[in-house]
Image 1 (spheres, rainbow, N blue to C red):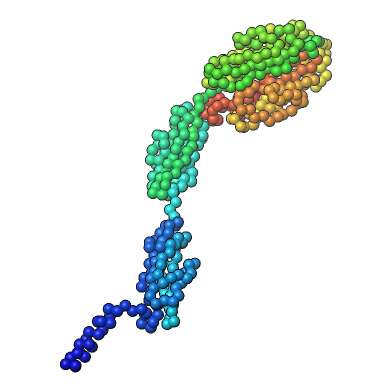
Image 2 (image 1 turned 45 degrees about the horizontal axis):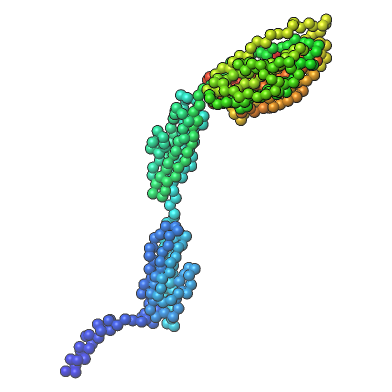
Length: 418
């Protein structure tokens, strides 16, 4: 019977022993029962939790950059890149360790519009322009209005009838971005009709006593139909002052509100017993039409040239002759807003030379750079004791683009040249 009991103990003892938890490893080292990263894969900027449990340890460290921890616990981490974390435990019998890796995927970026352009940016009615674009990282690209869905990289010809802002939209799972360009559409205007020549007044021994036009201007110089502008003037020494194109006789100084329906060229004439003088200005009304021609001024008596005298000669030696404007021109005579032009002039026989608007006294010969932002008529006035001569030079600044084939006179030069 004793032998049977001993045999039963030998048979069942191993099974009984396997049901008792072990506090140490086979050699008494600590046991890491769990070490987990959840989630094990994240996107840049996200976080993960490390959890662990250890039996029989007297010291526990977690690396990198964490340090001493307890036998069980959890911690939240947010690595910038993929990182392997190592748990190291120890007691008097030895050490154990375990590792987990947290994989960090790069942060997804929204689509990028690297280019969206229109060329040219200004066209005339009936012309076309080209839209070009380049997009990366997008699942969908479209252009509104009128174009629709397009590929990520491409170009498209457009010909809107009016000024249009195009919107490019690029979208994907990571976001939506937009970009815009504006195509301006303007009518084709013409300012090619030349201005009439100014009258040249006959010499007069008392010419220094003719009236003086201190100022004559129209502001604003460009209006739309239905809008108004203000004409102002200041004259001294005149018996009569008149302005053409429906204005009539006016006092020596004053102002007048104008509302012309078309582009109009105004001329002020001031007279006394010694003779007339004149000045001019223009109001441009868009849509542009041809200006009204100034009237022909009745000429004073014919010039009586002293024996041996030659009109316009002598660079200051007047000898009974009027000054002579040999050259007054601009190069180019037509330009776009923001572009410069060069005024050039050469005058003989003058004691005073003046260019308006906004320039003032100048030497008898010279050149100057100007950059008007609208069509402007520059007037050179040359005088001496025998009289006054004037000549205009228009610089056209149209609300159109160059190269339309209509009135495109950007090469060469305008003005008078003898």
